[in-house]
Length: 219
Image (tube, rainbow, N blue to C red; front, side, top):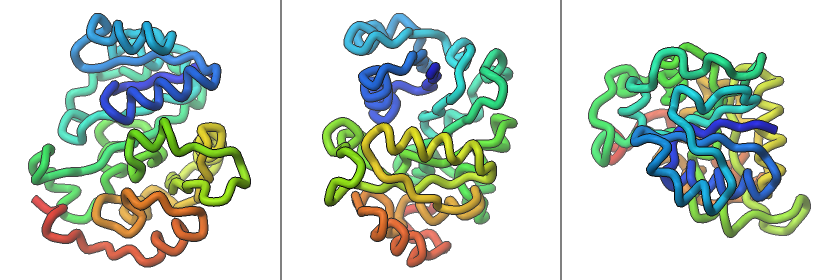
């Protein structure tokens, strides 16, 4: 499958490593340009491209950049993607640590719903609650005891199914976390965030989440 990855930081870089190792054709981009991705390309065989070219022919596009930078994505960066492209948002809102104040999120909008509005395309929220290093070294075959589970939220059942299948291929159990408006349950500060739970644990953690952001996660 052809996959585009916009963002080559910790999550984007490690998804590039894992997905190429699984045989997917990956085009990876960052804000600094393809020349800065030469080492990652040499390591993985991924094709470094400009952001505007990352989605070309892609069935899945992963957007994995700081929340504050979503507004700077070039208009039409999804043009040229395969029909029915699924866009995955891995982002988290870190107002004090990185992103500054985003009023709509502060007012209660789910982070990925805000991202969806900025890019003008439906998104599926995934890969936001796991440490990047664990994508590399804690994947396990299906049925393994202690296999980490990851919540996946989105409004389109078919799109969500594709992401759940990709999560499984990467070595994790996928848990359907509801619609995109429910994705606040996997945001920073919730019980599922950064906890490496199994599937039953993720279901329980999602149910136990509080919608009110703690002070650490508010601007």
